[in-house]
Amino acid sequence: MRHRWLDSVLVLFTVMAVGVPATGWCKGDRLVHATRPESGVVRGIVKAAAQAVLYAQVQGRVSQLPYKEGQRFEKGYTLVQLDCDKYRAELAVAIAEHEAKDKVYKNNIELGKLNAVSKLDLETSEAEAKKAFAAIRIAEVNVKGCQIAAPFAGRVVSIMINEHENVFPNDKLISLLDDSSLEIELVLPSSSLSWLRRKSSFTFVVDETRRSYPARVKEIGASIDPASQTIKVTGAFEKLPPEILAGMSGSAQFPEQP
Image (cartoon, rainbow, N blue to C red):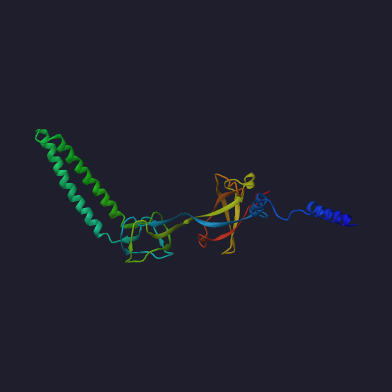
């Protein structure tokens, strides 16, 4: 009877092992399921086409911060101004030294015509004049670094410094973005490539405004992520709504999806 009981237990375990399906997915199936849009809907985020964090190029004291966070500016406008008296003085010294070295070189050229100067002295004076000219270029770069100009038109995202503070090269100064050309960043399953095309239309419903906006596919990523089997897709609004800001998120609905 004991053997009969053991046989029953073994049969029960066998039925459980064979007849009950696994509740989890394999790694690949789980990733695809997590990224597969339901009913043609996929999540996305609004991003600025151009954004930048500007760094200090020279050491100096912050003398002006004309713009505050959220304010608009035009391309080329001064965003950060450093005290530049020291660098302007260094530029003036470099110019004066170059003038002196250049006069010596030109004088040696005239003396060389009369064989009154050695070839070595002539070449040395020429090298000194070139060195002094290079010092001018370095001083000009330092003077230019005192003024941080806007690389594009846009808005100030954040300011990392205050007026009268001392900054050093490679210090973060100000963060910017161009909100005149916002994009929609989406991540779709790679299987979407069977129907997705550039300029494909879709509707983007923004969470923050609770409104839908017509958009089109602008670019399709150049490669597929082999781990998640997804591809990056960039969309653009048909007409940029004034109430949309970078960082907003929403859902993209693709009517073309089979």
